[in-house]
Image (cartoon, rainbow, N blue to C red; front, side, top):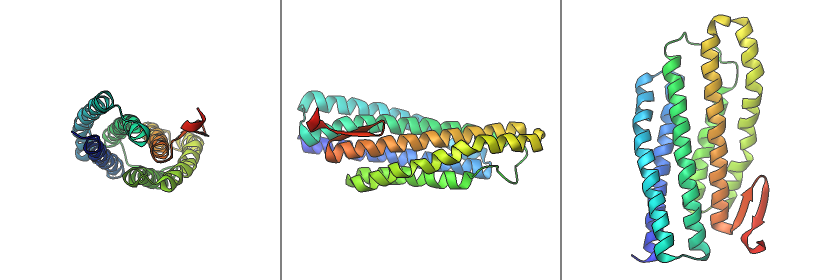
Amino acid sequence: MHLKRQIDQLKKRILTLGAMVEESVQNAITSIQERDPDLANKVFECDHLIDRSEVDIEEECMHTLALYQPVAMDLRYVVATLKINNELERIGDLAVNIAQQAIYLSRFARVDRVPFDLHGMTSTVKWMLAKSLDSLVNLDHDLANQVKERDDEVDNIHATMYKRVEQAIREDPELVQTYIHLLNVSRNLERIADHTVNIAEDVIYMSQGDIIRHGRSRSILEQ
């Protein structure tokens, strides 16, 4: 198979995995919002497919590197695909963690008022995941940068959550188990946002050759 066709095939497979992960995250979030254990179980079932796909893509990337020895843009694409593949699998695992909280929450009384901006947090995380994948489709570094810029929104919600939950537990200690599970939801959403930022940084590396880690950018030409 020609290298270009191999790269195109890798692109299709990583985008298919991305769509699976995006659906899994959506189902996990909805299972929390609606206390729906059946929807949570769909997330568990999908995780097996995500894990299998992640292994297949990794093997195909390694095969491409060994057989074709790509250079320049093609090499960056395969290397970044390997990394994005791992990020997506981790997001899938975090979706499972959220779905597990939905199972637990379905056993407790519903909280009328969540003590932090769960709706805002889930909306931002879903946007970041969708746009990180859109930036991958088009190798759009501007969109990838927009994803990176929104990470602070999620971090700020997560940072304020602890004190608000602590106060809520004082006011209604009977709901302590419910609030603990909501804390876990927030923690996993924050970690999903971090992984979308990593995907965005890998897209920037794909398109421009800039390695961005720890808040710093370095061109491969400088190395």
